[in-house]
Image (cartoon, rainbow, N blue to C red):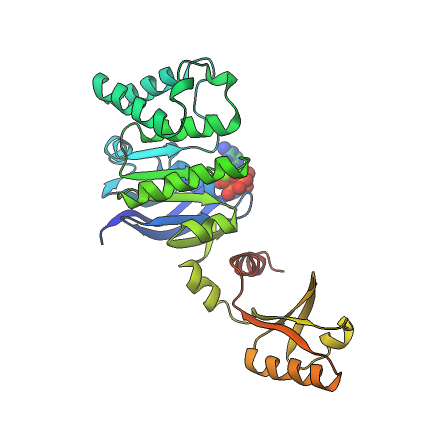
Length: 310
Ligand SMILES: Nc1ncnc2c1ncn2[C@@H]1O[C@H](COP(=O)(O)OP(=O)(O)OP(=O)(O)O)[C@@H](O)[C@H]1O
Ligand SMILES: [Mg+2]
């Protein structure tokens, strides 16, 4: 599989702040690559560098082999961008926004109109094409921005928190479109701080924190690799004393979650035996008992807390 995005030792500073701190990674062609991190982690700065909006202080990156500093025009031609802040002109209609951006990308007039019609229909906006964007809802605006990002039929699509602030239905439409585009060969670079979104959509995820990459892997492997985070979820037929449960050897932490109790451990096997011993010796019946790999959210919190020195 060929490499779509290649990043080597990229660094960007703003005064005393190192927004992106010597990061390196590769995105393969055909992947949905998630860039996951808390606020201020450096996600937008990385996207802005890769989409040739700002220049890095150090390092090098290529988009389908095109160096972003030496060949920015070639690199830009093959990318679509859904930026963090809307790039649609609110005083233009949806249609005119698409015509304008199509022209900027050098898409011939006839193709521009054909593609705009097809995209607007696909995203359920064709009937509203002549309305000013100012009167669009947030969800409609975001769908239009995705249409705008696709007018040049990009090989690589960059999306900076595309579903942030959208309702469930609008977010779902955007996610489905991302998967559909990926199924037809588009490489996707997606930033998000929504763990669930990253887990559902991405083939691989980089976790970024304070400008540094804390881990890169598939969501599944990130979960498995993160040792000491296995947990057991149990429910009993009777109320149990949480303080007593916390004293069970090899249990690191207990948490009550509705009618279930979650036990954190680094030795699942031993913990299971101990929990069963406890139930037996206290005359409790175990209703459910499940071992769980850590959620992506737990992995994320662990990795970002380490970097924060917590
Ligand atoms: N133009 C700028 N001038 C000064 N500092 C900046 C600028 N852009 C970003 N920063 C700083 O760089 C760091 C990374 O910001 P960035 O916008 O890349 O984070 P992010 O991961 O996208 O966060 P969010 O989830 O809030 O969008 C932050 O500390 C931010 O304040
Ligand atoms: Mg951002």
